[in-house]
Length: 199
Image 1 (cartoon, rainbow, N blue to C red):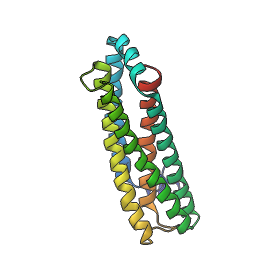
Image 2 (spheres, rainbow, N blue to C red):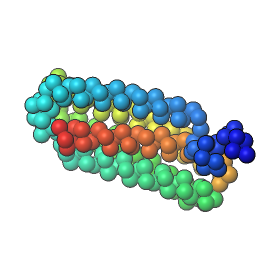
Image 3 (cartoon, rainbow, N blue to C red):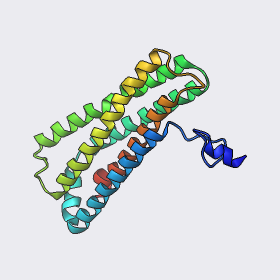
């Protein structure tokens, strides 16, 4: 019986507990986590070699901008989780409303990032301002790219939700989006203290 459960699609080794989303999204999430693991290794190597530059660099960044982005990411992730919970309960309308709220909140991230970079440049902070800022821009821009993919994914899932493409029995696409967005959120929760708090 246990062997049958393992062989069924969507059923993991824990019996009837499903892995949300689909195999494709988890391949993508694994690649994303591997990529950022390499970048975090680069961060620690650079920080070990230039501790003074990392301390001084963090003092020049806007902690307010970092905190706002963190709040936007966490809030959007929460709204997407509420959307998944609603569709699992069979409430399509509430799921769509939560999804729309998650999408609108997520759009605040690139806007906040543009405002932050504009502020940085106005204060003479660019990629050539030292090793700290080179690593900072590299990691945060890479994260913005991954978040942009997630936001584009929200557009697709929103369109499918509006068209009635998800139900309590079939909502793998919404779960896949939620899984990816949560992973992207977790990565930002690592980036935030590295640059805005601990450096």
